[in-house]
Length: 196
Image (tube, rainbow, N blue to C red; front, top):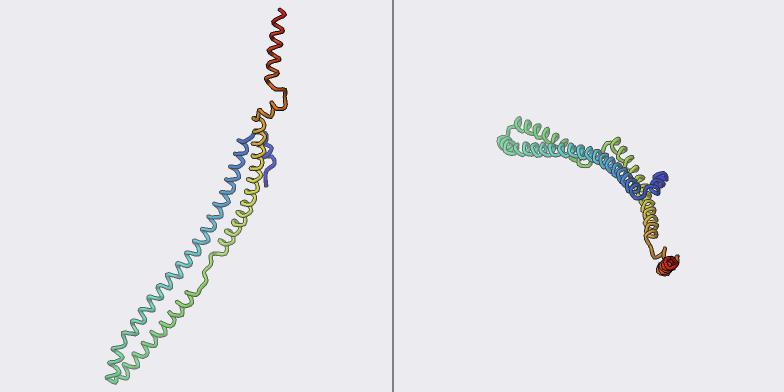
């Protein structure tokens, strides 16, 4: 909202006061922008940190999953040997170990699946602060644009008035032609000097 006191000061002090006010408006707007950007960065940094933690966990789980598959595959030759030899105890032991590894692999796969589907959002307090500052920025932006428009209108009116002041042809158009007056002055002086 335009500050009437400052507008009156501009009328009294002219362009210097208007420029100072324009700079104040710009500084206030820039401060609102800076505060909003800082809050947005804090929110998105929080989101990035959470996503990074999830991504690192998924990467570790995928490595674990690959290791479990490799361990299970490594039982192939032992399983074949126990089957060929008919070693029931070895077959039972291999089967238990493979079942344990498969259970672990299924649990790891489930974690990977769950973490891959998680919707990550930032901290609620950081969101609230950023949102509050964004609303304030929108208000400051609207008010600053309105104030700058009013200031621009004021400046245009002042410029038009100064143009009128400098327009000599309008002044001389409303008076007796200067040459006629100067001729009359010359005649008066001549007349006055002639009587002496």
